[in-house]
Image (cartoon, rainbow over all chains, first blue to last red; front, side, top):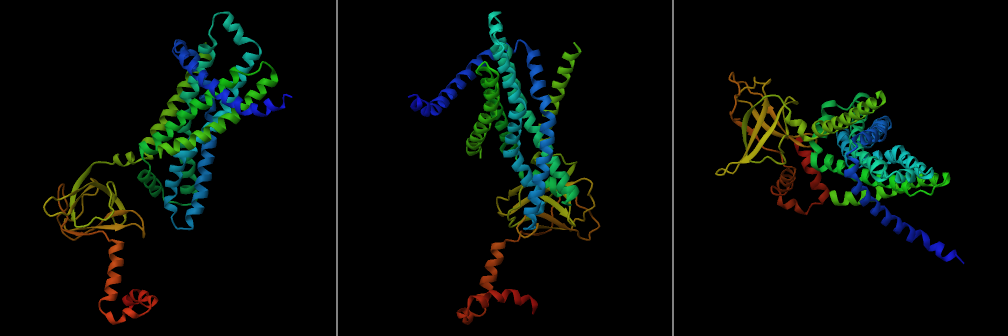
Length: 256
Length: 175
């Protein structure tokens, strides 16, 4: 008998989730000024979310740049246009791969830990205890994590891009023998500060907002069971990935 | 206390690294990098056609980059292009009867200004002008010349098959 409502539940559920998530964003933004009075919490979160993600971001950036250099060198050598490899490398990194791969890694590395931490706080009634002591969890727990994620993402994406360029340089110049001057001059000729680099930073900023919002929201609204925390963590990664790739398409369509 | 310190240190390091990376991207991988050339002196060349020459295109002697195109303007009366070349101060020994020509790197690559050194004992100075210049080669013009030049001398051959006339330009230089 309850089969019918259940079948229609996913659609109305996800619409309701999007709505609740948006409202949650407003309540975070309202809590941000109060959380800034405690800068130590923010610094601690930037350390956990941003600085601790550096290793994975740098390693992955290096390898992505190396693979990109290798693949584009192979493809371009059929046309004898290997000197354009740095253009391809830089533009694909700055415009797309940098922000997108960084935020996917970020959702896996930092988003899951945010969700699990807040979810466990919910499951073990720590959030309720804070409210009992008239300590607002929004401004002490949620807002610092959200702000730290939003601040960290553009910086992490920049580090990723830089490592990608260095990785591509290593492969194409040091191993495959592209001229180093040609590599840099072709890159500087084709990359624009506003259109490529700042658009990439804007993307990273937007992705940071979305993925951190999903992470804190999933943690905050998790069912107070260990199973609930597990599901919430999974949902953080799944929803972040879907939302980010969809938003990436929209932003590319507008920014291009 | 020491733990708090290490948080602050790590966070500070991360933020510095992030902004350093952004600074690296902004200055080393964009056209901003070309502004950080050493001291230059400017020489001027007049061209009737510069083709697709762009600002900051390289200036080369013997294939070695010695400077870049600083400005491209038009003379109001003679309607030819004035190209201002910024040449690195390290290369001051360029004879003043050198010729400037606009070349294309590769078949379809970007255009650059190549300088063919002359033999004069006097060297180019700030504000000097190239006496000899050679315009950009226009691929369309060249193709147009081939087509027209092939047709005009022998109008009677117009009825010949297309494949035959296409072979003509290639065989002519060999004679």
